[in-house]
Length: 248
Image (tube, rainbow, N blue to C red):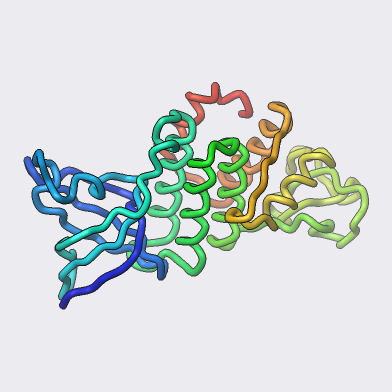
């Protein structure tokens, strides 16, 4: 059967001497594996779309298993994003999050819009580290690990919120904290964590944060991520190297 969908390429892997296997995240939130035959040849009708960080309309044949790409019309190449090394690294990290957290078939409702909005904002030259923190917050929520940020996760108090507790599921107050079992969080960092959890990436305006503020935010998100998800993440390690890993 022949299918048509709008989507973005989140992974492209060489196959043999001339082909590429694409992982397309469709506008419906489904990951679709597609074989792009001859994509590595010069010239090839698939050259423009057989690479990560592109948006296109894909026409493919599929009965079961991997689809065969028949035709593709490029919608957005995100060329500005690709010209910035840190922005490209954030985009790569977003694709690894997507591929590994959301399974092989169903990526989840709203994920396509979120990752597309991230790439569009990166392409508009918005601060890549701020965007990265916002997207990580969205992914934690989609994966079911969003922390409680509005009140103490233990006693429900809404004042004196001083630490984050992985065991309690979010922020906790000074009366409930057990030293060594939680991470300190400043009111400023907590404010931005709360904002990031609520922000719509597609509507995001210009946000300028001091380096130490974004470093604190990233440190908390990273700690929360490792406590609940863990694992080694290749593209995140590359991003850390590019940004000196100063928040760790």
